[in-house]
Length: 129
Image (cartoon, rainbow, N blue to C red; front, side, top):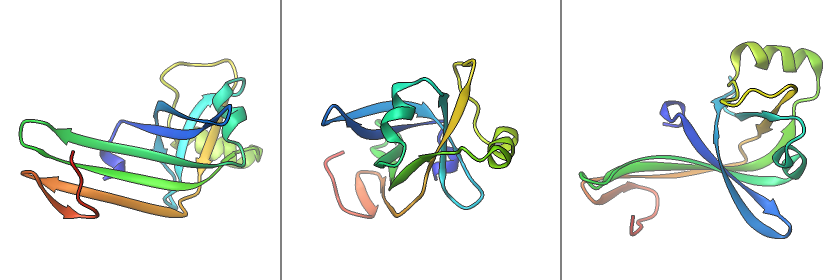
């Protein structure tokens, strides 16, 4: 399901408070979430080595259906030049071009999700959507 979503949200800690940023993303061949951002961004500095959550979803408010997937894991900047070149060719591109871009890799340590069809939960925990 994640592969079909164009945008997700990265959840991290900013000044000891939760911060949520919408980002475009891609999936690495091994299932890791990849985000491209500015090397000088606060996001790149804040998440390197930190445990973060990444969420993407699709909702149809009229049909009362949709899905949500949350990936929790450690985020790291891709610093190996060869790995960076490979991801640059196949990974997501930033919607806002930066002079120097970096890739954030979120290693999936816990993946949870839920799907709703017609107002009833098919998978995961029920929720007031």
